[in-house]
Length: 416
Image 1 (cartoon, rainbow, N blue to C red):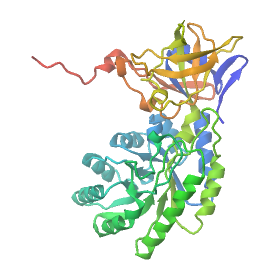
Image 2 (cartoon, one colour):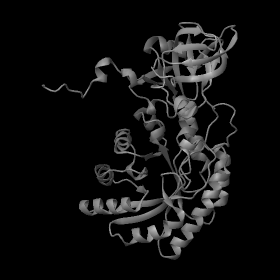
Image 3 (cartoon, rainbow, N blue to C red):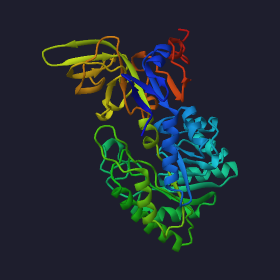
Image 4 (cartoon, helix red, strand yellow):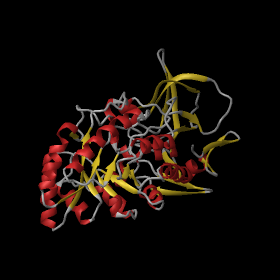
């Protein structure tokens, strides 16, 4: 459910016409619905109300501090993968005891920053990382809360670039080796083993892979407790998908019922790391048609948003529904929707049946709230788009559009 809807023939976000925002802010722009963000978080959170849990929003999916603040005010925590994401979350007011730090490549300065910030725990991904965290904690006179991110070798049946729970993936520690790794962690004096962590992938549209992973984690937790290693947290990661096109995805309540039923004997506080399922359909990318052209092979609709603004179609060949901001009688055509970037891979849709657009019209690229702006870049020295948040009948620019001076900030020409 989201709060982007047509009134008459015009697309609105909550109680504001999208065209009004585009006229004042310019295009391209990212547009988020506060009501949708809040609703999605509450639905996911309430689905687990019967068990102790923390909802740690995946900052990588949308890192704007106003978006983070929305979830933090609802009692949420965050899942981070860098020192920069920790900085953002702290600026947004997160309770540091609701921060989990994932990722395979944590640097020493990032680990120390997280320790000084008193985060809940690190999701550790290698033996060497265990030792580095222990050494950092020793230098700082602290004990580091940790969980091992266990790789359960479960196929999430998603795009290979966003599958993270198979043996061939770089993430986590092989579940067959995890018991020995926990023993080594238990021998390190500046680590506090708090949990077990797992994340199998993103945009998962079936519940069965989560249950397969959970079964393997339950066996590991029993073995650990038999050895006197008390596990207090079970981090099941994120990954629940959304509907971009025709995907049939489980509702969070269905996902929760299945997880709770399958884990009645675990007695842990659950940690979940939803990202896409919360923000994906809460945001759109608004772009203007610059030109249209045709050749013997194809029709092209050239817009002012490109792969630097929304990378997912070029990177994953991902589908985003495209619709006009202003509806009118028009023909349908098969076309490529392409941007201004000097790459043949710069497209938002390829060979897609869409309504015919004219120069100057506004186009809405739907389901762009997750991994949209957060993956954007300045490629071709293009300024990154602004982000706008609508709440009821008002809108707020929560990130200003970059200007040319922003493009060279930090650069210097040597004296020679």
